Amino acid sequence: MIDALVLQAGLLPEGLNVSFKLLPAILVTVMLASFLVIGYMFKVADTESMWVAGRSIGNVENGMAIGANWMSAASYLGMAALIALSGFYGLAFVVGWSAGYFILLIFMAAQMRRFGKYTAPDFVGDRFNSDTARAIAAVTTFLIGFVYAIGQARGMGLVGLYIFGDIGIPGLSGYQSMVVLMMAITVGYLTLSGMLGATKNMAVQYTILIVAFLAGLYAVGWVNGYSTVLPHIEYGQMFAALGREFSEPFVNGGYYLWIATAFSLIVGTCGLPHVLVRFYTVESERTARWSTVWGLGFICLLYFSAPAFAAFGTDLYANQIGPVYGDPGMTSAAADVIVVLAAQLSGLPTWFVGLVAAGGIAAAIATTAGLFITGSSAISHDIYKRLINPDASQRQQVLVGRLSIVALGVITTLAALDPAAPIAALVSYAFSLAGAVLFPMFFLGLWWENTNRQGALAGMTTGLVIWFIPMLNEVLPSYGLLAGAAGSDGVISPLLAQWVPAIGSALVAVPIVFVVTIAVSLVTPEPDLDTKRLVRQCHSPEPMNRQQAAEDVVSGDD
Image (cartoon, rainbow, N blue to C red):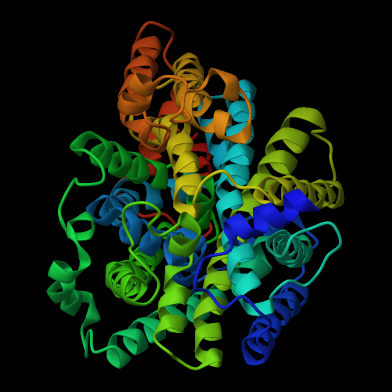
């Protein structure tokens, strides 16, 4: 119990009024209940609806789902937090998370839809004709879902604690109780609805989060005299008052770390299974391409606003609570809720602050939904159906998928009870993994027909090893593993942490994985002709019919 109290004290942001708030609590309760109702209304019983929403989603709705699926707690809360704490370095996240979608739009969205599978590991397994590659991709997908979701659970716990206070689950702190409650609700509606209900919910969740974020930004800027109609630009006039840590480049991190972080986020965006699977939920390549355009537009509405929100929150914190930088300075817990904190410090009505907070919960739940659906589909479809029980009925697959969602929910909840890093940092580890292991396979698999099974296996194994080394060096000691080998700075090798940082390890991993994959493919037998024709069809100038996949066209030509 003492440990729980210490943990809660360490996570509670200073200056934030953590107590039960009636109107915000009603607002969030109604919102959570609506997610459950929508999940029930669109409950599924077959695998097509469970994993790819029956390929029935339109471009605007899919764009909203892309936006909600993408803008997690890391975007809604963590991006402003990073900019507030580390200034210019935080912009690496804005650049990385935005630029990745341009690569998706140009090189991968339509091509992935043309390939036409159910899951990201499904693509890897069928493209490289390898069950081993499929298994590696499935395990990687599950691992990405787990690591990524820890950050979302932390965001839900912190914001939920602000609204509901300590709900008093015996043996747990207020923060831990809220993590358990929020994750239980998320797992509850996902086990009912699968991808179809999750997509319908994501459209609602996007509307809630973007309205809450923009309304909060404009209200905070207006009441404090920071801005009028364009806070996205007007916050620049505050630079002199915010300190050099906020406004001067590379004060809080060097050039290399900035580039490594941005690069990892760009390639990670293109390798995240829960992003790529959205292109399988639409009926045609044209819809896939246009939904990416809509999604990017929806995402930019928030990304262009986050730096302004961070500037406003930083100034309010410095004026009303204490120094932002230095010792002790603003804690990572306070930064993680700087969006909510700024609204409260502005003296806005409690119900309005609750609305801003509700947007953070909606963002975290939407992304967790996407992660859990892709993680469970990897286990059910790619491991259970394709490798263990090929004769599995649809009912058995859906049951295994639902059990996988519950399993993901349990281990994510346990890990989030005592998270070792801020939201955005936790999420960035998943990006490095996706960039190092999956992105090279998707890109080469779509655009170089000579990429073969041996090359893919060698490349994926290399990517996993390179990703794990900095995790071993920096992250595991913070969870108590190998802590005895770490120095006072918490890492085992400072030199390795400088050049292969866990947050940006894809900068080193991706070029090496490309070279290894290409080299091994060149010295081993080429793929068969059917596989090459499949790859050519993925970027053929000839249009394809709705609901048609490259495999249908190639088999029809025989």
